[in-house]
Image 1 (cartoon, rainbow, N blue to C red):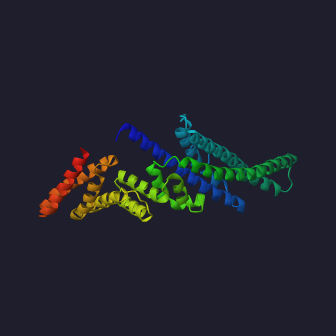
Image 2 (cartoon, rainbow, N blue to C red):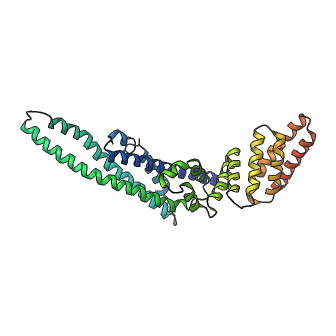
Image 3 (cartoon, rainbow, N blue to C red):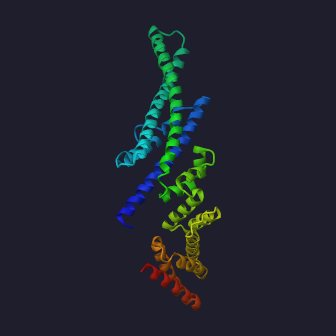
Length: 322
């Protein structure tokens, strides 16, 4: 892997982290909003959601966005910068409602204590009037801030869709969506993750499964890759390489499962079909290495014909590599 490849993979990983935090924050805030409307919201519920000391979900998301998107001033990256601005706006709105909720909880308790006290002094009556003003203003502001924050989350969720349309090459991101479909459904409703992936890929959900499969291959997660390619084909994805990558993933999964002879037909199909394809170089190397390991093991078991077949597969892959 080149330095550029590592940089791209790290950027892709950080994008996934930001998107994951945003979805988590959106769902968490909706729970906060519903608790507020029911009159059950407490300051402790929002304390870990937003703060300015680096110990909350929104603070982490804001800082991650600033680090990745705000410094990116390359032309054509305006959507990233707008998303960063939206996240910053959400954070500051949430900080305001945090402060007002704190005032209502702390000063509200003092207000109730003073109101129930008999024989108050003049000073206590004056202080009581001030507390009533503070809590009334905080109540009005909090109601407005709750509605504004909810609107911001909803608008930013829609804004994120336009940004995600540019991230189809991020295999880690498409994997995240497939692995967290329930969370995506909570944020967007409707067809959830399928609607989102239709925006990211011309071939829609079926193509996204193949993209996830290739990303799983890069991580050597062969069983997950096999599942993704199989589902992609079942969904009607017509790319001619899909059955070949399915065979490769299945062959490697069988190989690592210890069934060496059973892996050969799959690896043979993959090697024959992927030979000559420019994008197949890394996978041909994996096939060659696996077949080279299989051959002597089968020979030791007395399976000479199978061992020679494995050698032939390795040679075919090595020739394709040049």
